[in-house]
Length: 355
Picture 1: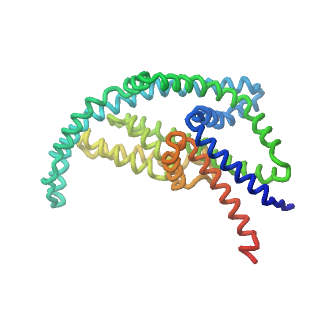
Picture 2: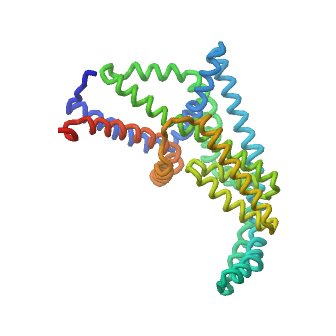
Picture 3: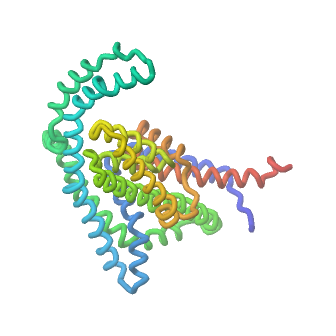
């Protein structure tokens, strides 16, 4: 393969363009959020649209079908799942004082007797009084959220524009996705096109592994854990199940967090061991389902981001750019990972490494 050389002037031009682009993204980050969300949704939906096209449906009809499916999922979340979560959070706040009473009158004496520890000096009454004073002000999450939003005309306009922009932009991006990719490919200088195309495919593979694969696995695990804990009879099954599914992008973290929280909740609610066994059974079956069915089916053998890199990227993005930074953290991390692999391969093949 013929090697191409980049002149010093071209290197400086690329560097200046990268700096200017990054500064513009920083300045425009408040208004870029709905477009980034739309881009993310279009990226997730494009494979489904392409799959529908293979069964002789037109691009527009395929986009309409996928678009309305996304819309139905969003509506179901905001009008069904969100109120259920809100109700469980409110009940959790009301039950915390009872849980503290059980810890002080039940668990701590048992631990003192079995382990020989002096836990009488630990006073949880102050924590209980603080929670009793705070939970009443918690109120309705949704009501307070909409009240705060409606108190500011600028926020009302912002959220209204989000509600209008995201569906519209998502629809047009889905419809013209292949055309946009083709135009971007044609705009790449021909001598760099093979390298850029290869790097783009690697970036897409990493992003697809996480977004199209891991997110589906997380969602499926959250649903399974929630249903399983609900069958067990756990009071906060939806809240615990979705929380365990949410953090399951780190291997075994979702299972560990879920077992600890659900186990404590089961002991506090039922005061027996058999329900803890049921909780272990739910998470054990869920882990087997993830390892034997979900991951091989939805992720396969693709190599994606390391879990530590995912955590660091999300935290760094939130620290630097807030909510917008969290949205762009994983795509940027995927691109950086692919570029580092590419430069590492070049380094291993360079005269500097092997003189």
